[in-house]
Amino acid sequence: MPKLESLSDEELLLLVSKNQDGAFHMLYERYKAALLVYAIKRVGEEAGEDLVQDVFIRTWNNRYSIDYQNDFKAYLFTALRRRIIDYFAKENNAQGYLEDLKSYVNEFAFEEADEHVRAQSFRDSIFAVLHRYGPQYQAVLKLRLQGYSNPEIAAMLGLSEKTVRNQYSSTLKIIRSNFSSFLLFLFF
Image (cartoon, rainbow, N blue to C red):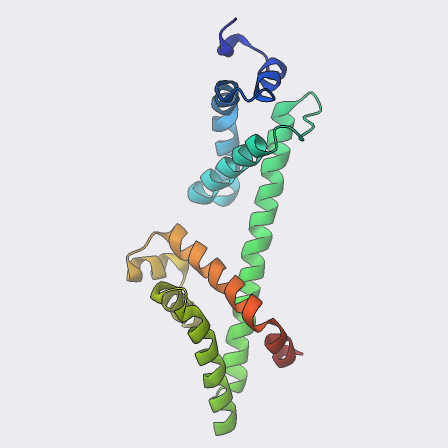
């Protein structure tokens, strides 16, 4: 059997479809650098590395059902471009959601004593739900509501920026799932 380095993408993909992880590793090594350059130029080093890894993980997990259209390189770059678009959409949605939450706190919390009590009750409800997930989730949300960025929060809490970003994203999901009907009532 010839060495994996000398095989074409199509030959390697045939081996991948037969669960040959060495063939997949060869494809990974063949395209990793180019994909990283593409991703890092668009989203930065940390997010770029995560997105490239995600593309390869999804490719491996879906190796039996993906149609490569005889151009694996084009498939990888298309998949990465879609992950980058998803990344920006997620970041924009998370930022918009935080702005809505800030807007609610700023607009209603100080109008009257009754409004202040409701806002405090709402915040207490959010933090009560987050209490089940640990103090870092609460700390990340409190600092974001105070206007700190992910790098500032990471420095304050002694965490990596990626951990802060992931916990913040998880916090928003938790809030949405627990308070969706309540938030809809408040904002509309």
